[in-house]
Image (cartoon, rainbow, N blue to C red; front, side, top):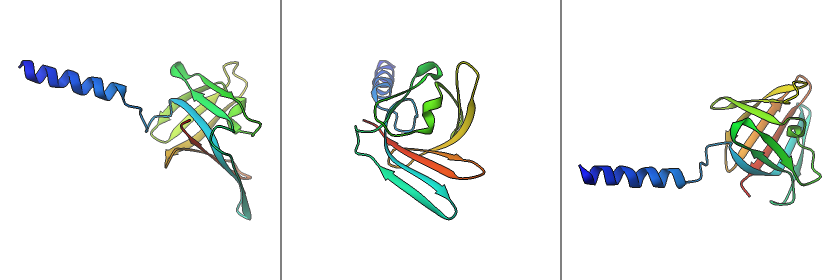
Length: 126
């Protein structure tokens, strides 16, 4: 019984210390944007560490720092995870809200699709 408890303790310590690669929470650096319409897309790439850094913090706090690159996230300061592939972004003042999709493919890809165009942003961990 003591061995089983010891093994459970070791497993729980290891799992708590691992970086959760399938979680939006934490810091992310913008490395690529892709936007446009069905007629074509524009792409812009950034070297890691030179672009925008986004922090999906605990308690739903969202902050953006650094870089001169535009990110559609700049107008929001809060987030809520709605499911395995969808986030709700909003301002704590209640003035704006939006929904985005997300997926993990060599980083974090966020997508916004509007009636006029599509926009994708790819982030990596710093």
